[in-house]
Length: 171
Image 1 (cartoon, rainbow, N blue to C red):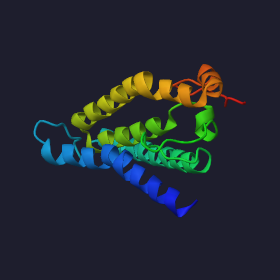
Image 2 (tube, helix red, strand yellow):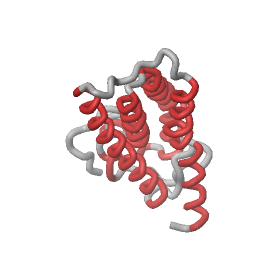
Image 3 (cartoon, rainbow, N blue to C red):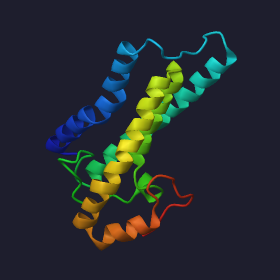
Image 4 (tube, rainbow, N blue to C red):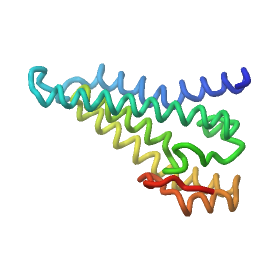
């Protein structure tokens, strides 16, 4: 990966998933502790939820990282709207679902909410998903159709937006 693209990737990751999955949850937990639920540390449910949270966090980080690499290598761009990919990325997890980056960040947020037993972090997760859903419908998908034309329309017709298909879509 070229140094310029690497720096653009780092900036995009720090500004987007870094703020959404790092800074915002830390702020919510620090400032909004009053009235937020927490697991009882000695309960069996607490340890089951925390084990599940670690799986969700690991899966989310892995999926989001894979997407960042694919954006750079295949798409020759970043996840940022101001520095989009130059080529359509329809490989790896993108053969199963159109928005695996958002799914990865959502898994990471779900893991954090589970770990902390925080309903306020769960509200942040739901807000993140809803805002992204509207953004994708109104801005992202029309923009991809305009940039990539028939290739994107065919891809969108075969690969679901949010719920992964069981078998990978083959071009």
